[in-house]
Amino acid sequence: IEFVAPRFNDKGQKVANAKFLKVQLNGKILHKNVEMKGPTPSGVTGKEAAVGPIMFQGDHGPVAYRNIMISPLH
Image 1 (cartoon, one colour):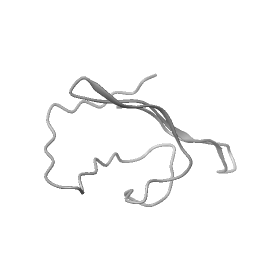
Image 2 (cartoon, rainbow, N blue to C red):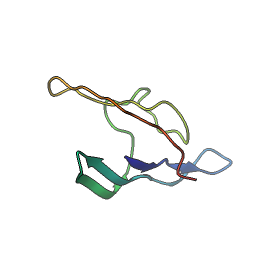
Image 3 (cartoon, rainbow, N blue to C red):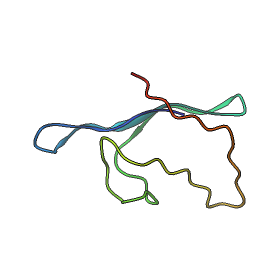
Image 4 (cartoon, one colour):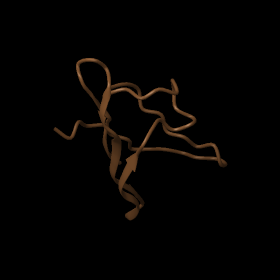
């Protein structure tokens, strides 16, 4: 997953939406350049933030994750 968080100005107003640059699973690209207009409905806090926890959703049946590495893009 290559993700860019939303950006906020000094007053806390959002100036840029979050964006999934690329979401890839088992070599297949699932999403590319998808802009998010607001928070996902099942997010941790229900609010957008420039930094914060990452949540992997698996609410449509059993899901297993392995070999997850998180690295900043910049």
